[in-house]
Image 1 (cartoon, rainbow, N blue to C red):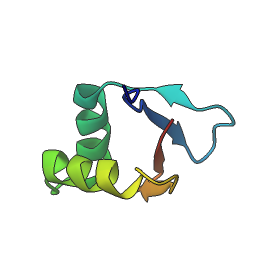
Image 2: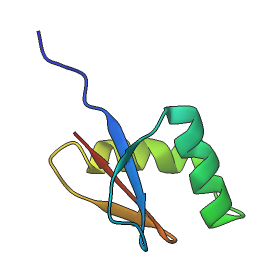
Image 3: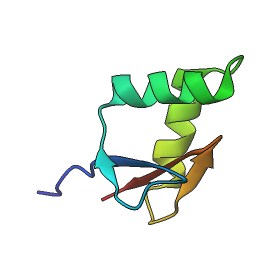
Length: 65
């Protein structure tokens, strides 16, 4: 059985990555984008980070581990 990857976040000025829930990730994305679609952007972030990529939204980075 394949383990579910965990979404991680880090602000550009931070050194450590922090585990984040989908709800919190949507809130962070909404805060960074102001007029964007948080849920839709999260789906893109989750899909793009599946293979080890790091995605930056505003001053917030996302990856999966």
